[in-house]
Image 1 (cartoon, rainbow, N blue to C red):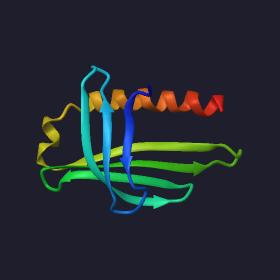
Image 2 (cartoon, helix red, strand yellow; image 1 turned 60 degrees about the horizontal axis):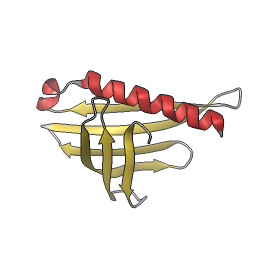
Image 3 (tube, one colour; image 1 turned 45 degrees about the vertical axis):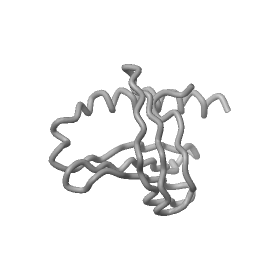
Image 4 (cartoon, rainbow, N blue to C red; image 1 turned 90 degrees about the horizontal axis):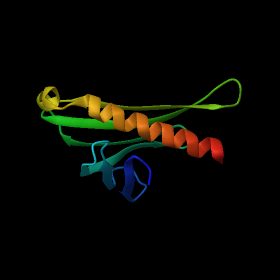
Length: 110
């Protein structure tokens, strides 16, 4: 099983609802309801969700072609809203670091 985002269910279409199954590094499992915001072939995949002004996140995967023929993954999430100050973002960062490392291992083995 891959760390953090262990499964994403939904249709691959703009504005489609998504169910994101998360397993945090501390073992806690969470289900996040989001929607697909942007799809650009071979460039970007972005989903987001929450309540704007309270707590809202946009999760972004960007692919950047490099001069040597390789590809750089830019993986980030931006949070906004008044409740952001009450969330421990370091735990999220740890989960993303584990997920990125697993993806790197998978891609390099392919």
